[in-house]
Length: 421
Ligand SMILES: *Cc1c(COP(=O)(O)O)cnc(C)c1O
Image (cartoon, rainbow, N blue to C red):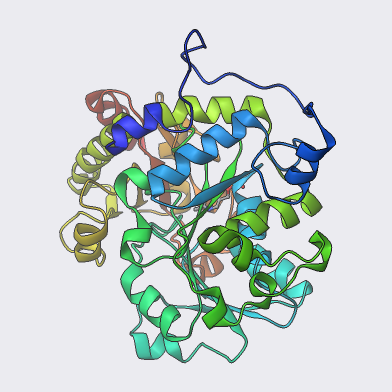
């Protein structure tokens, strides 16, 4: 099946007389015919549900679908994107270990890596992902156990050279984990470029309607955990009566452990309701991504012609530093997220946003409706102009998440608000 067909048909196949749509199994608990069967489930010798903290049939259908979309061997849904990153990391890292991460990543992930994981004894070095392999190599230590980056960085809109990072990671016998939230598997499939693990905030385009918060971890099944010395996967797990994940589950070792050990212990599994809503979003994802990209491309070009606009950041524009990487990794488009700067700074940008009629002021991106955010008066409000510049943002910067409205209506709204700014 091609990806458009997978979005509709993977994960759930109704049998004779069953509902055409994925049913919501609103259940925490499951019934068995024999103790022998339950025994097999608890020994992980048979697939099935024991408790909805680790697995639920509605959520599992969505996991199968997302695993297929990314071309992985398995997936685990989580209750948020942040939970997906936390579990993905802690599944293979212990206190004393080290992460090499691209510096241009989501602010929430920077906090997780720089502050919270540090408290747990895991260090992170942030590197310029645009630097040479030799330069990035310098950040590695003997205890480095993971490389991390975002396909399209939020909010910098930088495109990651996935193949370069995979080469550096693999030379050090370390897996590459890619946050593919903005690209979605429709625009980029990181496993085809050497990534080993993927996470998504499904809160964004996969949902697309601002109705559920969620995340997912996908395992390519390609990484050689034994060669890398990942004892937590290749040695018996005392918390699961001595199971050795690589021995019993082969290429699905990583994702199986994430579910049966960490999800069991942390309990950040999504509800069946939320998985149902996410599945609705996934069904139309290819159509929506195509339109988000087409609208964003036209709007980025329109903004470059506006006198009050200082600079427009969208990877397909002439002169954008990520144009070549975008051609290689994102040939179908670069998502709906654009950033641009207004001349005149903080006040001018605020006036522009306050005059928008169609585009909504919201702390969100990747929705069907066009949304704007002004970092200098919201997320970066406490900072002075000098501090904002040091964070790589200008006081007049506006982040625009282009929606699915008719492009002429969005352009008309932007034009009238620019007039008043
Ligand atoms: C939003 C976001 C996250 C965090 O996801 P939540 O679902 O909000 O927890 C992680 N990575 C990226 C790129 C995001 O945009």
